[in-house]
Length: 378
Image (cartoon, rainbow, N blue to C red; front, side):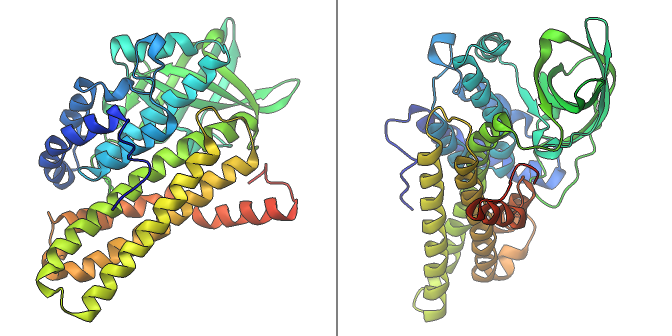
């Protein structure tokens, strides 16, 4: 299915397509075992894809947000878990590049470490969002932090955790502190990820116990329970990249279903089902492309821009689930068997609903925005 995100000038996309065969060979076994896709992650690193979002002047690939989304979508054709896990690293890298362009502290050093040392960033923002798990306590020179973080994708190979904590400020009240916490002493991945789908992402709980974070690693001090302008930017960047993964998963199911149904191609019911899948994927693809147009290469904070990203994600989530349902019907009993590409996609795509904002809350956000009502407290 043609897409506008698969631009021929995107060299990173070509690299993703080239490593795809290696990822596909490993995907089924990792899914069956529920094991982290460590070998696939290593292939991404070897291909330079984990540093593609680092600006070229800092040693990276200089990929745009659109190009990163195209890569993650292509990777998902071969292994949904590898695509989703790496998308968490990619969207944090993209936001760090956004911070670098504004001269914000710590951004350049982090980006250079991604390019030079191959560090992997772990994000907890999806589960923490505006009301993070864990507490920060002020001490001399920084903060003492503790908490249990969930859905920490690629935790088994993570180097630095981009995370946040609740902080009771004596003057400002309850705040959210965004911090960079090394995955070292006092930080332990629990190895407990065991889910319906995306079973190779290594999205373990991570327990943080009395870790000292110096003041210079506090990246932001934000209001608690509020989608403030910096978070609007994060969502605007992250959600198209994440949504592209689930669109890629649905496209993989579509291709497998068409192949399985080809011998019955003269059946009008089969023709209609394939047509419906093609329709849903085309509209979802248009939604992603339009959201990427709205976001652009360097977005300013905007609830309307964030809304475009969220609506595209909602459309992709619902379309992807419907496409994978139909693919299961077309694939028949063989698709229902463990180890089938369709069966794996059928489970993997369900994760699309869990990334904030959820499909229903997205409608609430869109409705409030259209009515001129506050949207910051969702």
